[in-house]
Amino acid sequence: MAPALPALVAPEALRAALDAAATPLLVLDASTTLVTHGEGEPYTAGPLREQYRAAHVPGAAFADVTGELSDPDGPYPFTLPAPDALAAAFGALGVGDDTHVVVYDTVGSAWATRVWWLLRWLGHDAVSVLDGGLAAWQAAGYPTASGAADDEAARSRPATLTPRERPDLLATLPQVERISAGTAAGLLVNALDPATFRGDQEVSTYTRRGRIPGSVNLPLFTLLDPATGRFLPVDALREQLRAGGLLDADGAVTYCGGGIAATLPAFAAYVVSGAEVAVYDGSLSEWTAQDRLAVAVG
Image (cartoon, rainbow, N blue to C red; front, side):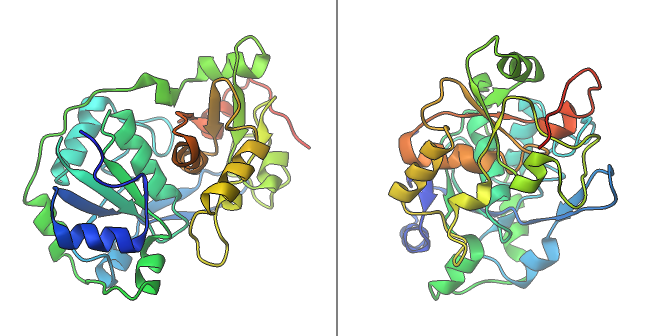
């Protein structure tokens, strides 16, 4: 199905699409909180449901990225579920084969791009990210809704989403090992902040500090306008991605701590050029837990 909206959609375009109601359209709020604890202790994350109930795009349902859209039995936070389980979870939210999804969050867009990546990994290309999230929607002067009625309404209309898994969008540990060792083509791109990339951040949530050897740093926040939280204009976005090596690499793979932040530069590359960038889902949570694998610092 041809997407009804572009991958990155402005608030004005979303408002027009909602008013037109020409195609099945579902908005998802994927807002999530992430809390850091002590040195070497995994972070915890949870759904910002109360925030959603206070204000959301009218008609939006709430997507629990850490719960219903992650594998509860996975070894690491946010582990990718099996295709059938993930498709069923989206179906329970009202996402069907003919549904165009627009997703946003309130905390920097990486949770939204994670949902974008999850759907595209399932083979569902009819998905967009609201540029700037809820803040941009409100800045455009559009109203918000409150309460849980919109979420309940979406869940009362379950749909069928047929999984058509795209393994090329998911990087595995053996694949990342080969790229890191130089025995396979590719570029490993770390989407975290420079301090975490170097291994000198204030608190590390990973088993060991550092990065995957051979990787380069392209912090996700450099792809956003700090004043508005919206993505940079396409030309500026292209320049940042090219400077980070992401657009010209043969077999680029993005990673972060647990597969969330990594989806934002992958999304940006798709917006700019249609590039299909694989995401290493286990990221540093998996890599640093393997004692046999080296980490680089400095």
